[in-house]
Length: 224
Image (cartoon, rainbow, N blue to C red; front, side):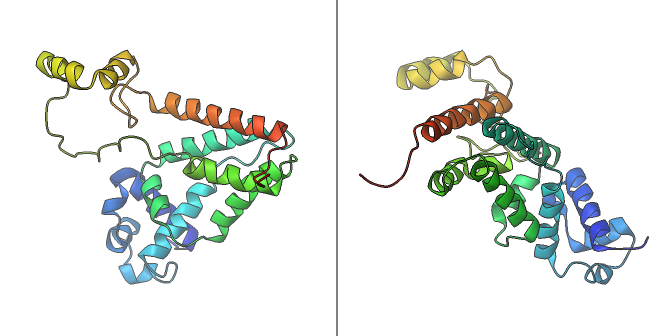
């Protein structure tokens, strides 16, 4: 197989998809490609460079902006595309959260994301604050109330609370119990019984509705 940087990065992405990023190393990647580890260093300078390049691969999978569509439709579609990509590559969130290098691909995505607001008449001031509010949501994820357990991890305690535990919760934490038992969704990272996708889109729409109101009112951060 003729190696190139693109071939190495795509193989690394596929390996992380299959085995998880924790098991990815230059040695395991070399074995997968049928080469000696030193052969990889002609194309990636280090494990960090490899991870940065893998991020570039997944960023390229996110859909581009929707042309002349309304800003809300365009932003929402792009964010949900990013979320689809992260759901396809489950390791990507962990890697994105640890990156300190902003590669040209990452900078280009961020720049075009900002452009979706500026090109539709948003002020620089409002766009600045909107980007802060969106945070990691622009990459398709948020830090939820509870992190999802690592695959294969052992969780202590029963899978479902028993009647005695429910009675104790009802006594000590009645509001938590009311919320927990009101949900009819599947299991997710927001909390047992919640639907991650539904909660993500609910919060996204809530945020975009607020942004739309600020934009319509000509909001500015300047103090009166």
